[in-house]
Amino acid sequence: MDKNTILAIVLSVVVITVGMTLQTTFFAPSPTAMPQQSAALPAPSTPQSGSSSVLAPAQNAMVSANIAWGSGLPGSLVAVGETGTANPFIYKTPLFTIEFNPVGASVSSFKLNKHLDEGQPVELLFQGEQSNDAFLMYAGNDKTNPIDATFRHSIKGNKVVFSQDFEMLNSEGKTTGETFTLNKTFTFGEDDYLFQVDINLQNSVNKSIPLSFENFAYTLAFEPQIGPSFTTAPNSNYNYRRFYIKEDGSEKKNQIKLSNGLYNTTKSVSWVALAGKYFSMIAIPDATSYSISLSENTAGSIPMESSMYFSRPSIKSASQTDTFRFYAGPQIKSFMSIYDDASLNSFGVSNLQLDKALDSSSWLGWLENILKWILNFLYGLIPNYGVGIIILTFLLKLALYPVTKKGMESTAKMSSLSPKMAEIKAQYPDNPTKQNEEIAELYKKEKINPMGGCLPMLVQFPILIAFYGLLNKHFELRGAMFIPGWIPDLSMPDTVFTFPFIIPFVGNELHLLPIIYTVSMIFSMKITQNAQTAGSQQGMMKMMTYGMPIMFFFVLYNAPSGLILYWSVMNAISIFQQMYTNRKKRAEKLEEVANNVRTFPGPKGKRK
Image (tube, rainbow, N blue to C red):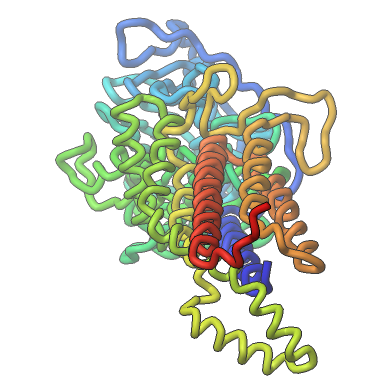
């Protein structure tokens, strides 16, 4: 194989490698360190049947509280009101099963009823051993000692209401005698993944609420990681947690890069999103000028905790209600876009633009959407996404056939010129400039574009990257079975065996599809080789034939099986296409030889 053909192959490798690097560098999270074990959540109470919510246990013993928060400093709190039972209780909606904890008026479990994880509703709160519950509050802007008094609670239709009375401590650590009531109300919609949290503070006298510490009244926090849970940290190229912020007046989201695990802003924002691969927790504060802090516990390749804090400035009135809304659910555009039209959701909100929190390949998002529509259409005809991926791959190959054919013809013409190129090099062995001039003239005479063999790869490059983005995070592939017993989930690697030990660069799981993909890629490259390639060119081609597939084997070993299925089928089609082209080429050569023999039969031999 001549130098230019090898250059074309090298360029193809560079295009693929650069594309994958761009995808994992700019559209994937930065990897961190070591995995940790997830902590088991407490077992929730048993819900009552035939009701949208389950009330707290019948016992409601009233006790007094006298616990301070803030280490006795001015601005510290002490609960002085009577409390209800501290037992957690369950509240259900058609979409959520929520375990509330009266201690801190918090949420200890948040499950999505219509989305499963190993056959059970997805737990959206992934809590480590030291994690706090969700939606705890802190006095002032302190983020170390949550207000964990036991609140009184009641359920009123679609509202869960918590209430407790507090006093401030003075500089001597004594109560001031001035009380205020803190009410926290959770409101749920009819069929919404959005819910509302209202924080109401009411002073017992007609003067400003005394809750203030370093010019802040309180901090509302979401501190656990979002689920689904994991016991070992997954490969961060294919699973991740990211922070996004959409500032008021901006049409775009910004991905937040934390410095030493922290980020702070006082800018007015439309929302703050903690986004995973398939699920998001999006906080939508009201128009108050909150100080927003984001933090991560980066002990694993995916942070074990990703926390959001909203610190409210001091309150200058005797009564104040602040409203936060949260989207807790799947990253599906149809579920998010209803909050752009007030008539489509229970809260009458509009123009939230939550769908901007969805991940895409940015400049190729439009192509992802086209491929997604086609894939979903095929699924409607044959309800198996694995079959849909195979059919879509065939359709893409068919659409690209004219370009692929032209590329193969260009490569074949390049190969046919090898003898003439060898003559040129032999004629000017010590003059590379003259060699290049003569070879360029040869290309011009034969009407060959030396880079024509790269054209198919350059055209397929955007489709390859868009398909990569689609199959890596298409929500409907989550839990989608292709072949029972082998590929039960197209969003996960196909694990056929688990080793009792760790294999370097691979782990302890045997995935079959990456092996099939690697073998098919090697075979595909081998049948495109020129049998007459010799010397250093042959050695270089051999390195490309085996080196590139092995590299991609390790890069894609933990990739979703849907993505590897696509590439394996693409390789298989390319193999058959190349075999057909080679056979046709041999038949044409034989016919050409036969025609030459008929045209120039040579001298007749004498008969004996």
